[in-house]
Image (cartoon, rainbow, N blue to C red; front, side):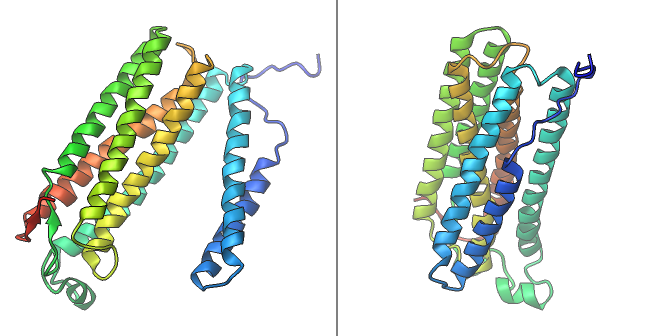
Length: 278
């Protein structure tokens, strides 16, 4: 037959989502830029752009799930999906490399060239900065994330062994721990003795930890979607790449936090600044 499929690849049907995503992203960027310039119409354009992006994400990923459930995701296609997720996580690693680079650039060489010396005052942390106690909320959040990695591994093993209830329970525990982590971080930010603006310490601290917090938020949503899919019976012991992708992303978030905790909280607390415990 002329239309017979004699290969393992998935030829995707024509889709409107790439062009809609492009226009939505352009609208969000345009609105955001002009919003910062106080244009009255900009928030509406920004909001429409974000709404378009969110709807595109939902619709496009729904199509991907349907493709998986109808058998289009052959072993070859799944392998290429894995390559894609690995490359995506590698690109995320480079984001965090930038934040770590900024932090270490200022903390290791506070008396460096004139721009750094002016920003730090020649010491790190800058004078009058009361840093957070690393063994209070940061340590608590570290334990929470490590535990969440354990519960997610429990869910994964339950899935592989056909224990659907164990899969759901493990996902629920991981989601709850992710929400608790975000709540503790928000509480920590509310009680920090330094702000984001006004000095380089706050900028580097909040960019690194806040960017990670955003990843925890995204990962939690990812796991919630997996929970809905698990309830719908989508995942099978030998075919569950959507769950694997979420698990890889969550473990990546865990590992990044360990580096943040050790570098910014623990190592960064040994510079002689006053440590606050509330």
